[in-house]
Length: 329
Image 1 (cartoon, helix red, strand yellow):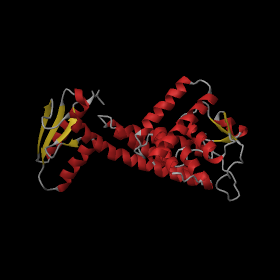
Image 2 (cartoon, rainbow, N blue to C red):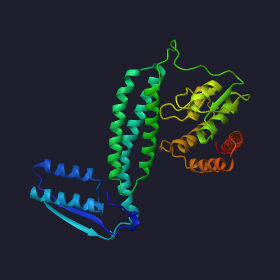
Image 3 (tube, rainbow, N blue to C red):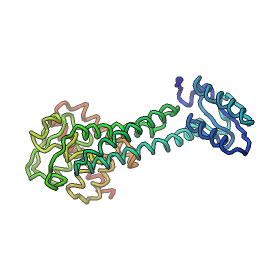
Image 4 (cartoon, rainbow, N blue to C red):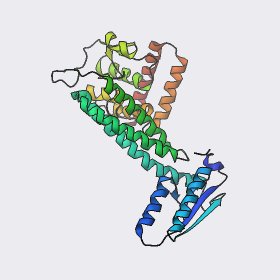
């Protein structure tokens, strides 16, 4: 793809005006599908538009020839600006078109995550192989969409992040050995006073999860840090790859713990949506507070080199958030 400038700085747009005979309809459908696949958007019924690059110019030129071979008419224009539309309005058309395509990838990833949860609970080894093929297909589709995402729709980053999360979960499932559980799908809750272990340099999900454990499940809980390979030997692993108290489906660790502990507090439900969005950035919840909370945690991480102190200060922050939400809920 040629270099694309920010949409407010484009030298030119390409506009394609077409007229095709009413029959046979396959020509009209074929042209429409090609315009969709190259990422063009309809400009208020007047034609199709793309940002100008050598590649998009060539694509439109080939399509002009094809339309003319069908006895249709095609006019290709290069324009500096569209007088009746602001650049933001044009960009919104592109973002909307790409968002619909990205959403299909997001939906596919969430379906795979749900299957992985069932695999984790019931050790369905054979299903993992099928999921690999589906995930690889989603990757090809994601790459295709991004190749025509000329204006970088916000939905693209969220879809890529969720795909990477899904790929990580699938890799873990592929390497995990089946475990005979005697019919128990999940471990029971740990006894009071247990040591909960997570990865070093805790961030939003791990800090929030520690706060939830201490506040709603075990006030005597202790916390420690270890790599994933050593976590189970040092205590109860949480937010560690493959841990029972971790990500499941499209739920972050905080959400998993809320469900396992049976917490019904309305404020905790709000916090769960904030933590989910700040951690996964998948657009599942429209919580604008997530940006500020994530920024505050980033600041703590940068200013606090000691993990124990970082966790303690982060939990204090969630105490404050919980108190503020009391006033709102």
